[in-house]
Image (tube, rainbow, N blue to C red; front, side, top):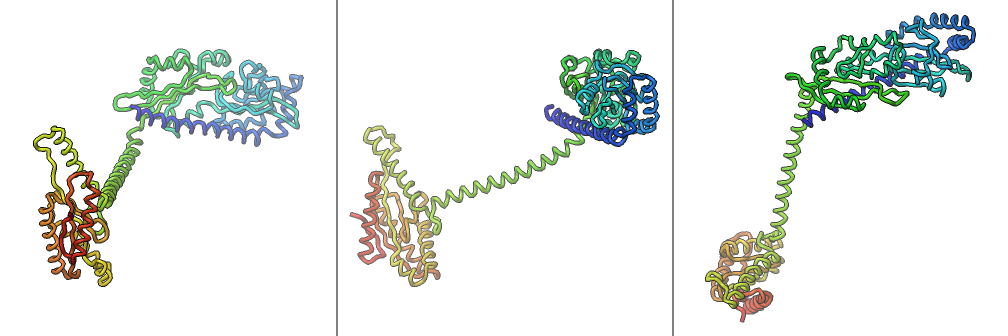
Length: 498
């Protein structure tokens, strides 16, 4: 419901902007009429005579003015300009082209727009109720070389706005006035032009608006009557009208929906509400919103797919980054730092087991294990690089790594320690580790003998028993010393540290 109401409000906002633009367009048209038709020496001459104290001179000026502008006024009516009304500087009516027989009444109490133009000598533009008609009025002061001769009003009827609105906006609109505004302003003999509107007892509508049945009706009379009846029974609508507030809702009739907007009709002169603008629009949510939603849905899936692809790529890159943070880039074995973390973790488990044994808290399954460090080094590796090139040296390192994978079980840890050195942590005591080390040494030798990509290579291995984490650094040093002895004793052998 929120989404549909949001769409309908957006539709009404668009209509409101178009309506405002039309009001501005009528002001521009009135400016053009004033400057091309009214702002002429002959008109000023007649208005100067209108200010004469001699009634005969005034009547002659009135007749001449009506005769001069009469044909133009008929043309202006065809352009939806309803009133052409001249006033004297004292705000008295001089000539109403729509009611030439009515003149001489004082407009001061009822027409603030005329008072504004005559007192401030500035044009006025805006809605205002009148003695006979209401409408959007454009009142101009008549000034000839600084001499104030009165004012003239050019106004558009509300019916013209209704026609334009319904033609362009595909919406029904009515201008409803407060009953007291009409009673206090309109001539008594003209108040029959208004009828009470069924929306609220305090609202009236001009008969020509109520009876309008042009070709641009967007809501049928029956539908409109049902909608207004429903609105009149809602306390929220009644409260909005009586409090002179805006109101918006959506009403459903069968399979059709209609959005309804009530907006205050402001008098520009008093800046106070004088009525209500009622707009009823066929609700085009499904015809207009669904394409937008379909586009949004497609965009959503595209964005979701892209996001998923980016997320999968990020996860893949993260896994790759994590892998290469833990592995050697050439051989794919664990690197030195990650091997150390894993090896220390196993020795820490032994340390914790020893504490439990000491405190007699160990379960039968919790016991220490024997481990041995094997430090392996490729013999005369620098000569391989110097004689055959570093590419061949890399192949030799990869061959040793593959032999480690083949010879050692999955529970044993091994890594490229650095350069041509490899480190292995095997389960078992020194004698068990020595057997594994010799088997590995011979396997590497045999594989290099059979390979056409590398020269014959051998390895030397130093062993050092280790059981607890506190002995980690010591075991590394002992394995290094044992490896040095293997090298010193002629290489291609296994030596156990003392």
